[in-house]
Length: 238
Image 1 (tube, rainbow, N blue to C red):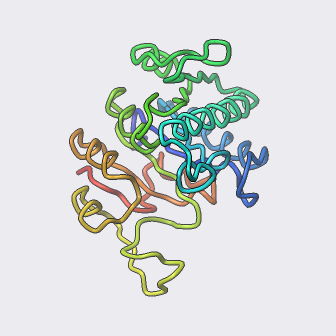
Image 2 (image 1 turned 90 degrees about the vertical axis):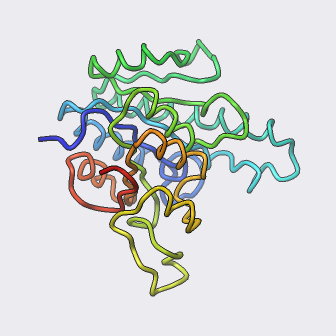
């Protein structure tokens, strides 16, 4: 029996780059698509939110010195590129997929319409939400939380690179870092654990949407988490 009926999978842009660290690695994207196909075959309704950090790092990187709103809009366009790449990989696996964008670009994707997104998922299609919320100053983590609330998802499955859950400090720096099996939303904010920005965590807390943080370096973990295996860290929920 599946743990969930409907989920939002949050992928960082870097997860699509693999070891390259920049751009899109077709082999990595194909492997992720294969795992999402396995979940889809379980009857799970799936939405995906991609980051864009493999193409555009925003104010912390490429956009240093730029106007914040302009930099954020450029980041939104980067998420569209990632979403189209993932859509192509999924459809090559035989998975019907729709990309919906918060910034209209009808030649390449549908505009975001909540009811239409839900209907797609009910028909077994994977829906990829691109271009963030459509507004600057909001992260793709916040997008994942917002869309999860809008479509009444059971959980957000958050794939992270190079880490298998949430720790009390950076395990790459501190060998004695302690991993949490579960956390409450308020603890994440109070401890400044940084798995999501505070806006995203607050949205999840207000709508009681659990977040499961797991290691995306092994794409098979997507399937394990969706099946209900206890890996990674659970934030919030029951």
